[in-house]
Length: 446
Image: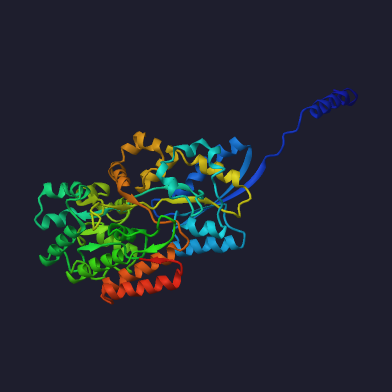
């Protein structure tokens, strides 16, 4: 074609292109999420990557997703968020324990979500009771539940057998605890017998967690104590705390405990407890189960080994007469530093589905947060979760109060002092009360 004939063709093509509207460039939004995750818990942040394309298509944007996930200790992890929040540079989404809602909402580090939650139908399926743990003292919701769990009692079937228990007695222990027929005192009696007969070494009759944490509160609750009164004021019940300290001091005197597990590294704690060969009774989290199967008895048969050797039950009844456990839901919170709250919420809604939460729950022995999960075949087929889920009927929560940390540390100091033999229960109580009055001036001591 000659140049003279080509020019009109090019002009027509140019005219046609001018009539076609240009496609607008997609907006690029950066979202940063920070998660703490152990060996079996990486879906906490990884789930966001699974739904990134879905949310991009729904919003018509390009998301630059930055996931920051490791197993940093909770103290430094929370301090990291607090410092970055004070600088106005915090991540968009932070995962933490629901109890942090109390302090972080008051400090203005996280935002209330009540006006946003109704915009996303996925949140309507969350187990209703979990929303209560997402509320700050002002009554507003500041978190989206990420997982739930329970804190059960684990017991060694082989060691109970060595103690002379029949297979039927061992198999029925969980049911007897649930019925209130086998109490915490019965457990300590059994543990003392195991020590006296040489079934376990002195101090290995019963172990709770080696460091401070939510689990320890169910002893105080089990003795009839409260942390908040009906008006939301922080309280400390001296008699309930004294009963806890007296019980642990008595357990020390009987050789059931001797403080040997206090302060040890978690890996050493799990190594001693998981195989069921050294410690008769121990209390911990439901998520321990899959961690043990993978990392501590994997070479012995994993979960099959655990079913054969480890039993699971509620924490036996104490003074209140009811077995007990504690649920410590983790929560996704949206930072006040976020410039893209709607995108952050869309991502949170996209992972609040049975498919996404099952990936986490089943892989890490955490309980589901959605009603629909209870009906999914995948969840129902997870034998351990099915067993543990009924424990939510007996559960308690720690309070979302700004002074919870100070209360908890003082209470824990009392436990440490009596278990180590440093103080009597009465002396420990006096020290704890004095510390609480100094650190929480408006606390009600009763």
